[in-house]
Length: 585
Image (cartoon, rainbow, N blue to C red; front, top):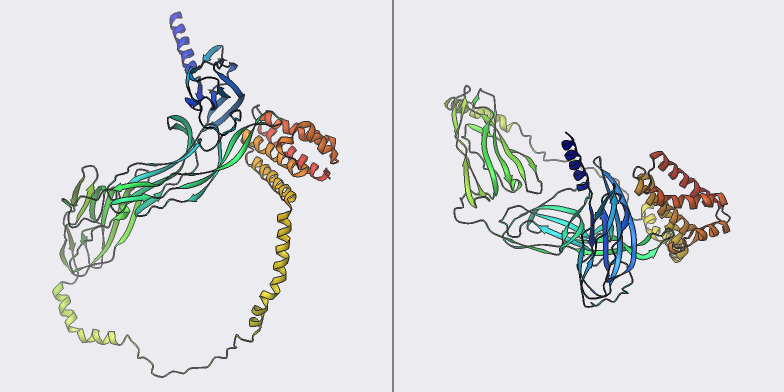
């Protein structure tokens, strides 16, 4: 029994240890001696006693910087803690970054050693001590095409992915050039929300977002070009500067990326074995012709439904039309579609419903219908046939009786039809209308003098606009005021998300200072803020509360706090900003 308990405890410990992930990631495995290297030590638990490697052969130019993030998705919690360094090699050759270590629940976890190949110096116009990151080699827009040589009307997919490295953040995107799908039938698949995923790109790990999913059906053979999608991306890039709290200052930039044009070589459908009645259906289908009833009484009608179900280009072909005897009056079809278009292509059902009304008593056949499609699996044409349908009209006039009846009353029917029309009147009685001329009316003079009356207003408006545009300081103050209100509004929206709430709240307070004190981020030290606010006749108690709340935003992002505390911090920020707004001269 004791042995069993010991084995069980050992299995539980192994299971718990297997859940701990601690690894090292580098920005590149090969670099020039004058290029910088970023290395991130990432863990999915809050490990203690982090021990960095010795970094032999490298010089640390920035770091360590620490990032902690925690999120809840579908009731599951995820945690990530990262220690980041920027290194510069001191020598060429193969260098080894040794193991880093952490302690968690009394156990020691280590990363695997990483080999770095250092080559000769590369052309690098920037200062090697500058740790700021460029967006040029860290963000890419890619169009993944599922198949580049399909048949005509064979579905293919275009998935647009935005890859970006772990060094940068993406905040917004704007379409500059939308792709055009000439000679394609296209269906856009809605993406309800963007999800950041991880994947390999150019042999390295990247984060990526799926921006667009399109299903395409080529409509002709030959080389068809999908024009590129181009985006303007707002990015956040780390720099080598720190703010008043010691955090790395993030700079905002914009990068234009393009997925590039894609050429699709579309194969024509084979001519060998193509039936004459082929209407362009491509896929895998089932064909049915179904009457609602086959036995009718006089005055009754039936619906004849011609339907195709399956997977293929359901919206891009027509159904065969039934041929009914003259004794059956057939009305135009009512077309209906029940089609879903996922990423794999159209699937579902289409149908044409014909209403048929019998005119005479008797038995009337509806001949079999044929439906032909090209099967992508076997690369052959397949023809499906429906059985002959016999319509039995149980009572009513016979064709002979109807003919006699129409002959006896032929003249009467002719007279009745003529009497339905009235004679055209040959005389008319026209009346003149008293209508005033537009020329010389009040409306005429009003429209004539309106442009002259508007000229002084246009001149005043132009001068006012030039004065506003020339007031650079005022414009900057107004912009910072708008940003403060924007982030306060954003903080209120994120009041249920602690980390995002405190980020927005801190930005709102910083932008308020920029607007009121005319200072930049680099000037926002604690002493400088206190001195400037007091010199502007601010209440010392309000100044102390403002600085305390600003410092608390950084701590509260990672400390446990309740929704009541978050609401109190928001209300406190509104009161403090309102008080300072009134006090600052």
